[in-house]
Length: 499
Image 1: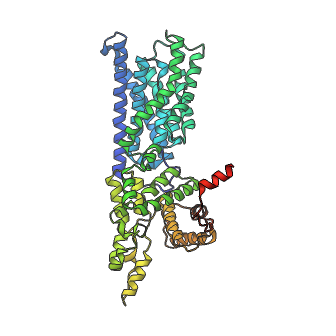
Image 2: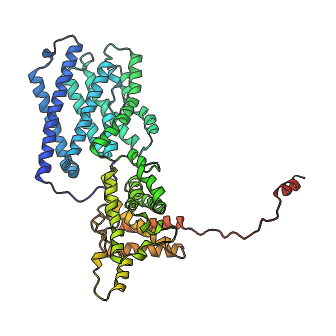
Image 3: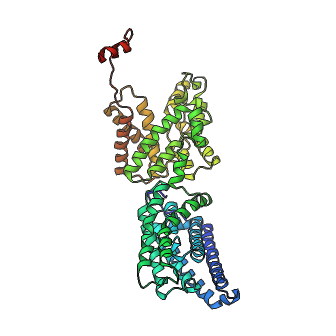
């Protein structure tokens, strides 16, 4: 599911972007027209007619004109509501493919099983988990119109009364809206199946209306089919979602849950090869999740990105302090310049690891951005002590870029704050709060949040959330008294108590 925050920055369109989007719209106009022709032929064959009798040039032209208008309305909607979505041609192609797949599945199931069993909410559910709730509502409306046009022009519902096409349009529209609002925020496939029975209510209501012609079918069979339409939509969604995730490189809550499983390949490597880095990432992920929730960002995405933000340290884990369990620090034998290059490279290495292992682009970007262009002051100070000449601070800075999203900024703060808090001798709430404010202040002074649209209000919320989280992690422990248990016979003590 798409992240909650929507960027205020509009990406510039290139001529290539415009050409690709127009090409996608034209190709899918052709695909819808061919799909309509195929439906007409199958209807004719199933009715015992000749295939050529079903294809009317006028009907196909009329249908193509209507579909053209629907696609034009779609383009206008995204042009004003979400230009960045429209700019990427793959987004439009994904939406069209969802509509085309939904149309084909509904036609096949309605023709060969029962018209009431059709998964009319499938498009709404798929769009919801692949994009956003707003886009899902719009997509559901457009799909309902497309199905209405298909049924009206192809004669799919000829055995029904004239009322039926309108009722099926209403059922599809209402079912999709119910699906969006009931399934929004669900991360469990079992819960999705359970909630899917609510999606069947509009279909059941439609069947029970006396003005609807059942087309000669049995009422009991129609009621059963209508009751199964919701679960059918959910089942088809579960089957198709991985296909769309892979084809269009989309992140969903299910994909993120898989990536945070400790059996995931890179997570296993962190646990075995860089345990200190893994433990650090776990704490950062808890902080990042809390911060994302506090400012309305995608908490699961923030948690997943935090899991992988330091994955580049796998290349040389022994050069990072948290993995030096034996106390041997290889930087003691290196020049400050070489040490800085090794530490700096873990961001590029993380990006390379993420892309090589086919992690989502958003996670790879966090690997690259979570240090921004911050200076490595420890090695800069060490270099100044080794030379009498001038030392360029830029030579001891991370290569960036600066955080481009609010989640990247959150992980930058959480990463620095966790490391700072761990180095404190006393971890009272006051000392932790002072350390976190210092971390944020330094990054603000160096302009690290200039490109991620983070507001001052959100920064203050993040500071308080980080302090609360770290205070919970590094809270004071009870000092237990030193009591010797030597010489005490527990069996004898129990026996005396029983007597």
